[in-house]
Structure formats: structure tokens, C-alpha cells
Image 1 (cartoon, rainbow over the protein chains, first blue to last red):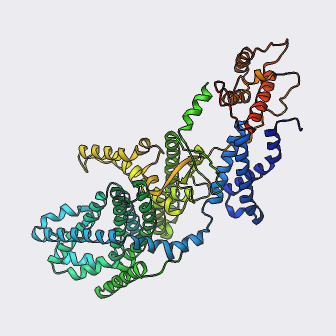
Image 2 (image 1 turned 90 degrees about the vertical axis):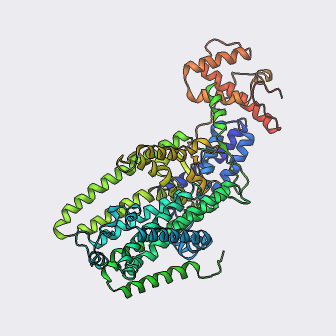
Image 3 (image 1 turned 135 degrees about the vertical axis):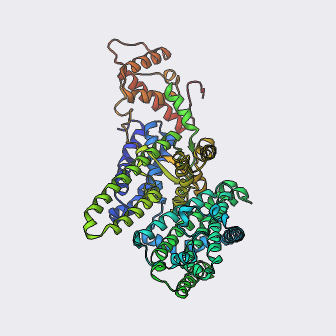
Length: 330
Length: 289
């Protein structure tokens, strides 16, 4: 035995450690980390370090290429396992709601403000255009989306759309689910578009404002502005806020790529992108809430005052949740 | 020779990833073709799941029509399709393997570029960008001519192509989602521990002189290792002839090529590893140290 190669003896001595690590990793990846016993779980980091030191030794002393390749692959696999996120799902969810979501939203307050201004500008432009010449309406709102709420409709018909208790053809829940998936898809799109130097995101949220402004103009012309506000704001506070946040996250990425400041362009994109990812998950949640409000609350609550109260309450909840000053513990 | 050539090509994809313990893992980037393959597998799975899911929902719908449970089923379909489209990639990449089924089959995974933990926000960000890189181009391909003009569709496709082919134009094969999330896609080859070719190979009936063992370096040793592992009789015969000629080995009668190669491999490795211990690495046969 002593006559055999030094690197061969080295391998025979350590082989068992590597194989044990490989087998534990296989178990952990196949099922989940919870499937391992505490003892095995604790063994992995130690085995990982032993394997890593084997790799260093093998690189320096062994010329068996297959052995070095094997140890490199095994070490990398173990590395990703050992240094991967080891938090439980519950911890992650809690951390998301308590810390990362509001923090991400707070960090992009400038972009959110810009998105709000762009929405407002779109709203005002479309409002005045449609008021001066109602034929502009169809440039902003496709006929399929308007659903009869256009300048040619009678006042009574318009009023009826605001208080239609329940369209019997589509059940409420289905309507809510459809609205949620549709809006969430649009906002994810607005976020993704941001990477092309903000512009597409800005256009998308401006267009969103335009649609709203054109509708407002139609209802205001018949003196229905107040009921319309109640009708739209029940869910609109949540929905518009969510879409603005999605646009803001997109703008932030585009801005970071265009003007990276002291960071490299790649670093800047990464920083804004990770925050954006958190914000987007939040946006999807907000749109889910908006879908429920739109599908249920709006169809079941028919008084303007109560509708506006719900709108005000939701605005208060979101604003205090996001912007209430707090100290972030590390 | 081909083994050597492929080594040098692969080296341009090696990136250093230094662990907190200070060891460089020398990870390899996934190739564009591997990633495209993984994506196609994932898309096929996605579409198949969606079709299966739809049939399941339709079956449940027709069964539930009597009880009026259709509404719940429609909601389930809408939400299910949404989750599938947007969170298929995210959910799989959040697992310990950091890979979707397609990536797993291709032997690649997602990792954070800074070597840290692959957190959920990175995964969400990298997959939200798919909207732009993947679903938008698909949308353009199926855009009806009645909606917009052909020129607009064409411009859209060209614009999308910039995003789709972005990975081909940067060193680290990053797609836009990777740029934004600070991730990259690495190879995670599953290697089994192969037997050591020097094990039981040293044979006292072969005696090589130092001069005979100094003819070759590490590079040739690795080629010889690959030849021995392949165990292809024709290539072994050719290699054995080359080595015998190079080291002036007089072949005794009835000497088998594999036995000769194994013995020479073991002896050469012993010699080179001894030198290695003294800090001398003879890279190849042209390296005169």
C-alpha cells in the first residue's frame, strides 16, 4: 500500500467523506431539506468544508483529472446548498410583509410620484380633449373596453352602468378573477418594459390615465362625476396605486440603466431590479385585493357615500402601511 | 487532440467563484444552446400542463353544471392559468436546486452573480422580465393583421429580437432578466466518482527510465487518462504506438497495449506528481523544467 501513489492513497482515505456528502445532497435535493434528520443537516456543512479542502489538496497534488472534476462539481453543488437561502417559507413571508415590501415601495417614492404625475397628466389631457370634442373618446378607449359607456349613450344608460347591481351573465367571482389576472398581467408588463429606458413604462401609465380621463369626461358631461368617482375609486385607489407602483418600478430600472451614477451600469440595474422584484410581488397582491373589491364590493355596495368611504379607507390603509415612518432593524 | 481543443474552448466559459473559505470553485457558464433547450422543455411542459389543466377543468365543469358549481371552476381556471404563466419559473427556481425541470434536465441552474444566496426577490425580478423577452415576442408572432399594420408588427418583432438575443451579445451570456436580478446560469454537472486509472496499474514488469518519463507533461497525461477511460482498442493501439516510438520502447512479444498504457500512465503520474510536490508543474511535452 505504501508503494502506491500518494494521490491515490489520499483519495482512498477521503473517498467516504465525499460519497456521504453526495448522498446527503441527493436526499436533500430530491425531497426537501426538511426530509433530512437534524444530525444529517448538521453534517452537511462539515462535510462540505472537508470536501473543499480535499479539492484544494487535489488541485495541488493530484493529476487525476477525473478526480479534480468530480470534486469541483461536488463542492459547487454543496456550496449552493450550504450558502443558499436557508429560511423557511413562513419566515420569508413574514419578512416580506413586515420589511421588504414597504421598504421597496418607500425607496422608490420619487418614481411613484413621477408615475402619479404622468397618470394625472394623461387623465387631464384626455379629459379636456374629450370634453372639447367627444369624438376623441374612441381614440383613448377601445369600444370593447367601453362597454356602452361612451359619449353616445344616454344619461340614464350611463347612470344605470354605475349602479348595475350584478350582471347576471358573468358571476361576481369570475369577474373578479378575470380583472385580477388581466390587470396583474398589464402591470408585470409595465415593469418589464421599464428596462427600455423608462419610456414604454411611462407611455403605458400615461395611457392608463388617458382611459380614465376620457371616461370621466363622458360622465362629467352628464353631471355624473361624483357617482362615477365613487364607482371607480372603490377599487381604483388600490388598482391605480398598484399600476403606478409597477410603472415606478419599471421607471426605476430604466433610470438606473440610463443614469447609473457612481455604480457600474450592471450594478445599478441589479440594485433597482431586485427592489423592483419585491415591489412587483406586492403589486400582484394589491391587484388581487383590487380585483376582489371591484368584483364584490362595487357590485354589492350601491350608495355613493359608502363607496367613497371604502375608497378613502383603502387609501389610508395603503399609505400608512407603505409610508408610515419606521426604523428598519437589520 | 480533440479533448485538448474542447478544453481550451471550455476555459473561456470558466468564471471564478471564491467561497468564503477562500477556494475558487471555477464554475462554468451554461451555453446559449443549453439554455435555449431548457427553455423549450419548460415551455413544452407549461403548455402541456395548461392543456391538461384545461381538460380537467372542463371535465369538472360538465360534472358540476348540475350543481351550479361552474363559477368556482371558472375562477380556478383563470387563477390557475395566471399562476402557471407567471410563477412556473419562479416557484421552481426558488427551490434548493435553483432550476426549473428544463434546466435540471440540461444540468444547469440559476445562481447569484456575487456568489451569495439566491434570494426570492432576484428570482421574481429575473422572471418578471420574461414578459418582455418571451411572452411579448410570442404575442407579436400571433398578432392579427386586423389589429395593427404589418409594418408595426415587423418593427415590434425586430424590437423584441434585441431583447431575445441579448444573451448572445455579452460575455457572461446574461439575458436581461439576469442583468436586472444579478444572477447568471451555471452548469451543474452531475459527476460520479470514476475509478482512479492508476489504481492497480503499476506493473513491475514495466520499467521506465527517468528520461522516458520526462518526455511528456500534464497535458499529455490527461489525454492518456481520457484514452484509458474510453477503452477504445483502436485509439489505444495508435496511442501506444506513438508513445513507444517517442520513448524508444522496445516492445517485448505478447505485450498488450492496455497493460502498457496503464503502466506508463501510472509511472508518468508518479513522476509528475513527485515533481508537483517540489513545486514544479510540467505543463506539456514542450515544457522543459
